[in-house]
Length: 229
Image (tube, rainbow, N blue to C red; front, side, top):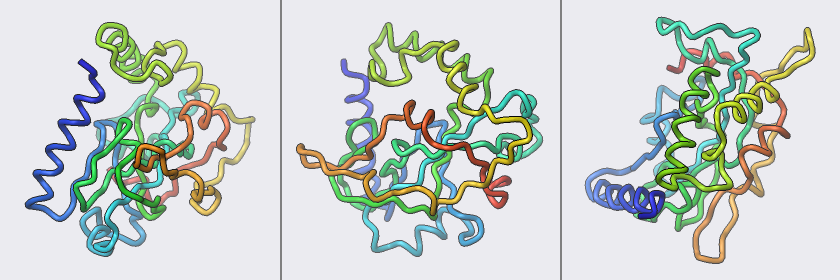
């Protein structure tokens, strides 16, 4: 059984059924959160009400990163993002996750059989790297599932174990002493070439995740997002 194809077929079928009754279907992985700009919207419903003409929407993807040198263990009584403020722009995470039409998702939900654009007014905050201890535990489990059930692409992070991913994370958050990390500003990233048409009749985001993390500059999440969840 092809795990990814089976998962995608199941979710696409559920989405078609839901769209017979509802205006919009949203899909995210368990570690992904869609957050419209709090300065402009009261929440996701408010955001979508103003975009009824857009058939497919992709959020702007950011990986939330843990710097264990200066960020302590999580306190569950406090907002998570107030404790994990470092981010990097992740082009591959600009996935077409909100749709009003029954166009099928493709390639692990990074693509869809319809044109779409990236809207910087809504962020996808990806928490895979939000905590070193959690990353170690999850990456060990994912590597085992990859080896036993062939889950995840061999070219993705699935085959990488705790040591490989932890060392990458630590390199991504390295900063010179006293270096001031600016807030992320969507205006500094070029979104024009990220969504590309494919020969098989669908559109998808372009940009390998791990190389992008090494290349893109470290930023802080804007203060207005810190109490989003």
